Length: 171
Image (cartoon, rainbow, N blue to C red; front, top):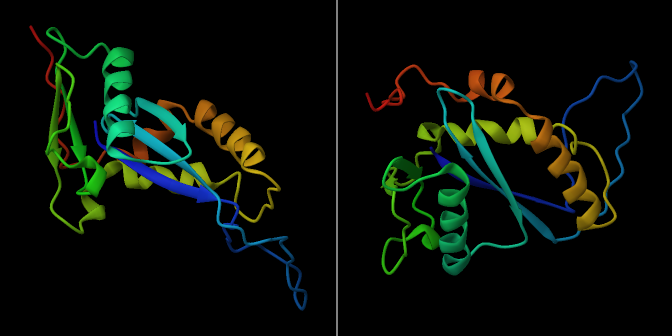
């Protein structure tokens, strides 16, 4: 399961849109620097994804996130999950409590193209692009609904790289 995080905020996401010839499209915006973090654990070959929304990231929060993920997915003696991470400071292995059944593998520095979860963010951003949100709660409601609606069949074509190792089933 690659894990990756994405920051969304009250600073609008802009995308190109169609407009009549000679008319400029208008999108409301009010730049404010308040953020919502979306964290995704994705199994690239199946599209299975576990989503978390939070207001900030830190090493203690990451430990709690790993523990919650391990419980939710049944990681332990019977199911071993390898998590693929970037080298963000709060992912650091020094003093990090990693639950039983979870192993961490770190990607080389500055290599987002190797991270399948990186390809989730355009899908997550679709309902918030070119929209104005007055509060983080409004943004969070739209993003949470989007994450609930994104199913494995929609996600898999974006994350199933031909070179990604296939899961191993115990016989």
